[in-house]
Image (tube, rainbow, N blue to C red; front, side, top):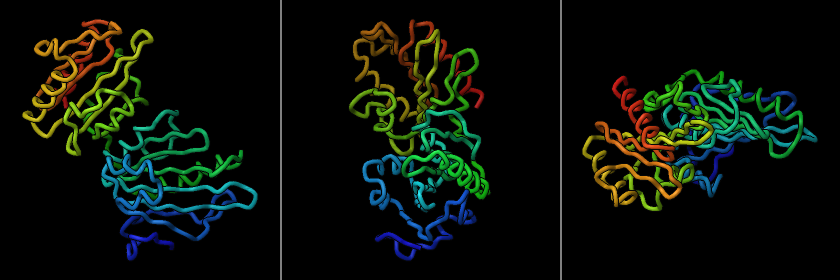
Length: 291
């Protein structure tokens, strides 16, 4: 087992208890090496994207490589995110392809398989092109997923999203904590005007109404006081001219509306009219009451 500098002495069982790694699949064989990265050592593996994983409370990573003469390497990465919420979250942040039927949520496209199950996020991909690699990637992924005995729950906050006739686009639901990650998916403001922090839960959801995109931002704070402070901060920065009303028509003639419900802050961006935004907020408020 190859252990990178900075994680010497880390026991394999501590990082991946009970998870089976296949020695071979479809003619590809494990090269016998294993790389392990803990916490901020992830920057030794993926420099620029390390902050994304740390923003989801990343614990550790195991990497194995599989080889077959004349074919591209296949890389399998197992990320322990510490909780099912954050395993789902890191999966949801980049999700764009259709469900692949592996783990508790997955996608496969462009030679890359991504899925989550329990506390783990898994990525399996080919280091180069090759038509036969796709089946091996899926086979490896299924074996790893089947060996993860525990399953987790999707974040409870997702149950507060209105669906049905509202036009929710399920594959575009994002779960996160960070102001920076929110801006990567939907830019709100350069400053952290919503006071987001590791203890806040954020859902960014996309809806399609008459072919037009509307975004619902739902934030759960640790308590009512923090939620109120965050809403006031947002309104002062985003809509100072209509601060008291909490309703703004932007330059593109779309509407932004806000509301606080207990420890939750609800914001709708891009509604075609006042009624549309209000309908989405009322639907969310009702679902919160049913949680």
